[in-house]
Length: 218
Ligand code: G3P
Image (cartoon, rainbow, N blue to C red; front, side, top):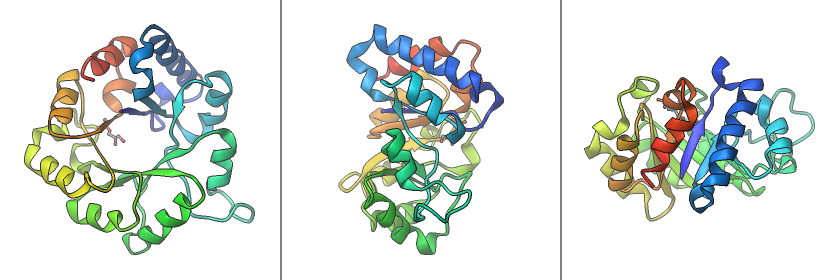
């Protein structure tokens, strides 16, 4: 699985998110055999329009909150995402960290409402704590490599340790600094079942070419 995290870059929000969705949809139409592997995590402000105009895309939320729908100003209740047809969300991303002391209960609460979580971690110890909540997936992203262009796969020993700790209970995903198809090949060889990518895709002048390069790895 390839997860393209669009974050909130100017190159990937509002009308740019629509352009990116169109590129992905075109790719999927021409390559139906692996189109299910591609997931896109747009800014939450863009989810509704993308769901409406690109109903075939696999849309992942960048975040969701363990709140009750109703009196929860500014938070993202699970119910609203599910209503929009979004059933997978990132959680505890390095750029949106949660309190580790509460994270197990929060994950359980969110998943009990039908949302599958890809919970991010920065260390193996965090992954082990998160595993207690039985999340759908855990994504290892070393903070110092995010946006660096230096791939997480340049640290194969810790990646292997992470995958070994997680693989029997949750989908092991890795990300941070992934910049090329070769990085994705290495990630899959190390045992990752998914790869999170952001800046190398969002800031590419040729997004279709970059997507093709990434997808060649699968
Ligand atoms: O969620 C993916 C992300 O944090 C990695 O970012 O820019 O290093 O691909 P980037």
